[in-house]
Length: 305
Ligand SMILES: NC(=O)c1ccc[n+]([C@@H]2O[C@H](COP(=O)([O-])OP(=O)(O)OC[C@H]3O[C@@H](n4cnc5c(N)ncnc54)[C@H](OP(=O)(O)O)[C@@H]3O)[C@@H](O)[C@H]2O)c1
Image 1 (cartoon, rainbow, N blue to C red):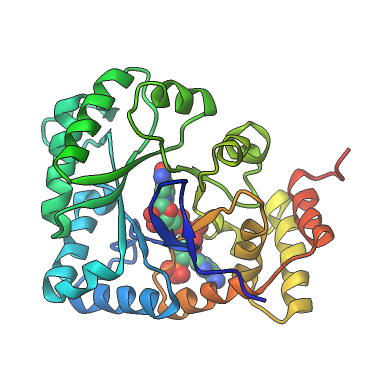
Image 2: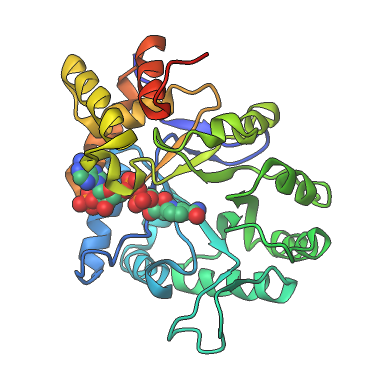
């Protein structure tokens, strides 16, 4: 039996798809992100039930949101069939931001509001479904963030707030000042990164009944190519499971994440349309408990205590 493709991200939160599609690598292969190419990606996702698209202001050197927005301008009816997640807070040293002398984070009210307004223009939309604070900052003032979010929600520009790469205590500190609950924590999560399973990150999501999002679910492709060490060990186990189930290795990795009780949402990063379609089939692959722990032990290099 297949897992449902629609899930609620948090109590009272948005409905999203069980797999999300990440737009970070749009310009990675040196190709132009022309409208037809982006439309084909969007259509392939929607055809598989993937309706949640993960952006950030900085992706593609501040160009990805605009390229995606050009596709929505070409076909505006697509907007109502999707949820848009975007992020703010990282300040890159980039020709597009000549005022940034050093890479840093900015969670001032002024910056959050300006960043959202720019994302809205770039994405050709009136609202962001879920805004994420991209990375925690030692200078983040929860009261100031709360003010900015209050304003953006009152104006209808943002519907829900979440975070990314936050520790549980950073998550709690921010939550304590907000009018509404945070709806997700997007973290790096894959069989080569077990920390979130152990450091309280996923426990906190379970406790609050919010769904974590897993970025780089294939470890940025490393899991498909790994030779020695943990990468090689995990890859060997994944390949064997793939052979036994008659599926591709990337589907086994997604199924491994999907098996966790916190209802992890893997954020796909592939640029290949056939790999998007294949990822969606992972919802019908259920790994049993021992298969799951075989991957875990291959990653940690020892059996569980
Ligand atoms: N919040 C954060 O701080 C943060 C950080 C990083 C990323 N993200 C989000 O997470 C999303 C996904 O990250 P990601 O792109 O690193 O995800 P990923 O799925 O771990 O990695 C994608 C890479 O793996 C390659 N790949 C996929 N399937 C493969 C296969 N079967 N064989 C060989 N290579 C394969 C892809 O190449 P092909 O294109 O050729 O398939 C692509 O280069 C991003 O788009 C972004 O939205 C968030």
